[in-house]
Figure 1: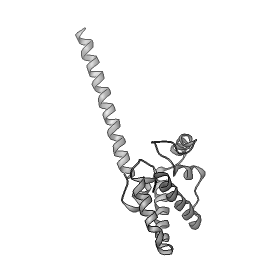
Figure 2: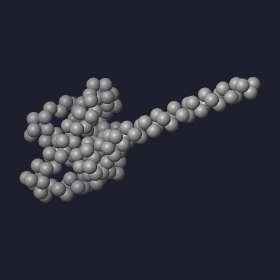
Figure 3: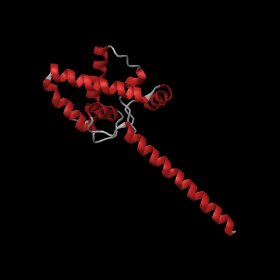
Figure 4: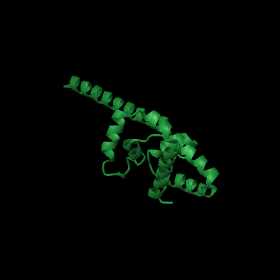
Length: 148
């Protein structure tokens, strides 16, 4: 399955499950299912992401979507066992790229993605590296100034 089709399959399952469970999904929440930093999938995705970062609790959102994914797959297993290969193919196809929905997939199924904590640890390490670099530059500047 191609990545775009895989993502669309998972998104459609989340949206359908939300309707069945009568769980509200705002327009921003629906659009965030498409988010990826690799290549924009919607024309306004960066504006949507900015609004999401400003107005939403990502942990609550991720838990809600993970629950919908888990419930949708369970529902499909019971009512349409023939859909399981679609789930497997979609999850496998998305592992090849960096998509936000994989965070929720990891929470829902425990496989095939970096967890939210994994992203946070990576971010902290990046900030730490940048901070150390800045401190080293300042130290070098001080020593350079003392020589002159």
